[in-house]
Length: 205
Image (cartoon, rainbow, N blue to C red; front, top):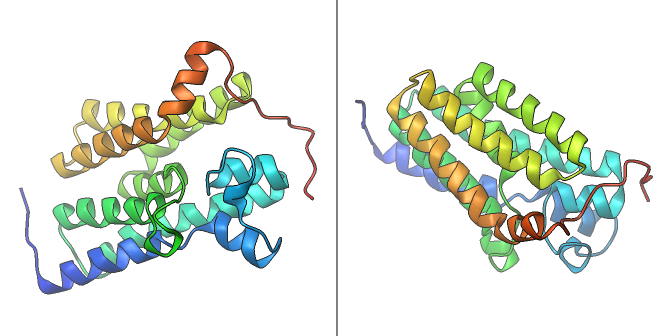
């Protein structure tokens, strides 16, 4: 179990939080639409609300921004040869930055896209398998929340079953728990049968 931690590790973790604060939905809505996406739809600054509010390509752009910042947080750890323990902390810092960004009054997104980017960098085979299943369920149910929760839950299950590094198992489990917490209202709506569903015919505006 490698828990090596240096001053550079601390810098990377702090940097990862601020990388997470780069919120794709907020930046897009402010710079392109001249408005705050948090005043529309679900009020969430994430890819799903961007998809519902602005259309497919806008939602895809936001997803990619948030996905790649998750990859970047882990990538920095790889570049500077950090331990799995530091990767765990940096990843959580990145998602914390996305969910609770200091520059946005701590009102960000739900962390799914960033978490997906992180998990792909940790083990792309297991992560992509989980994401694919989640994507299929999102299409079938037309509920992104169902797909998101499925993808992150299955990632944790796969990481446990296939016995990846213990720190990555812990990471996947925490990301799953965070996602469940951030989706708590969605889960209530799913149970009550009134969760918001996607309209695939919506054009970008």
